[in-house]
Structure formats: structure tokens, C-alpha cells
Length: 59
Image (cartoon, rainbow, N blue to C red; front, side, top):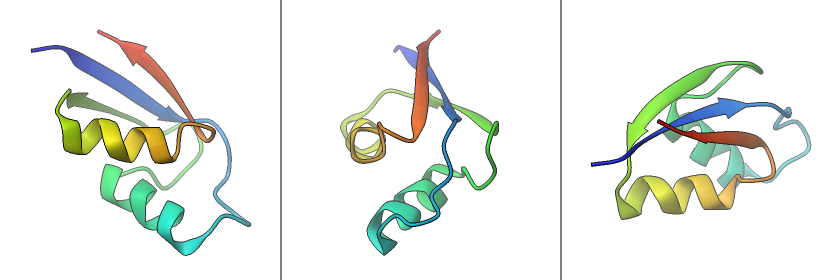
């Protein structure tokens, strides 16, 4: 199973409530914060919605 590292690089200020909830679901609240996830369709869908705010790195 592939893992991905997700890092918040842009602020969610001014974004819609749904995007902020996606970031909260991913556990990202501060710029520079990183989380590692196993790739599954649910996580990849959340990442796709906020792709303009995060940086993705495959591990």
C-alpha cells in the first residue's frame, strides 16, 4: 500500500466551509503541518478537493 505525505502550504482563509471541513478531516490546521496517509479512495478524494492548498509527496 502506497503512502502519501500531505502538507498544508496555503491558508484556508477565504475558502468555503466544505474545504475547511476537508482540511480538518485530514488533520491539517496550520500552514506547514504535515500528515502521512495510506492511499484509499476516501483520502484521495479529500486531497483532490483541497489540492490547491496542499502539497503532496509520495513515500
